[in-house]
Image 1: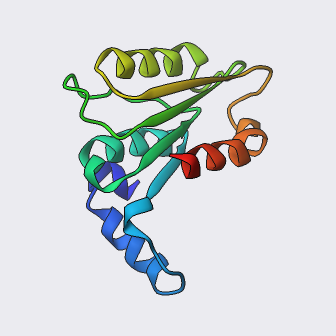
Image 2: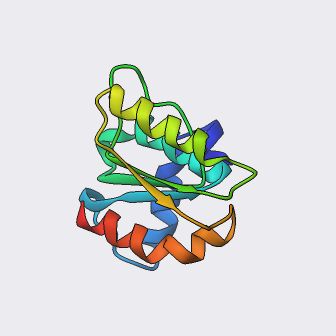
Image 3: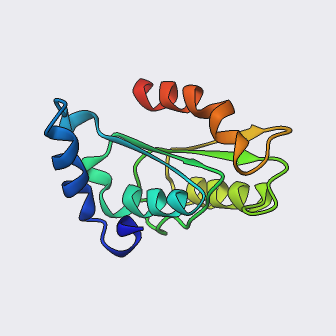
Length: 130
């Protein structure tokens, strides 16, 4: 994705949204699924000062060793053969050990794709509460 290659693409995305909706830049959050989850982790680290929080659904990525990362929610789908829950758990734990305010939710009985529909409302509620 563009965010994996160039995290500054966040400015472009906010500009596009800003053409039709007001954007409160103090409350910007991001969510990504699968490969988009990897982009979300990257944004949560490289753009952390600009993000209130991030959420990663059935995705993974490494937090920086210094813990400089926006608060992040990781959602692990228990029957995910693409991004196994063990990998998501490891990302969340690594983030916590680095000092990131990271939370892990286990989506029991859900797979890689259907977990999005099952958890998106709760994830958005979590992001808005940050």
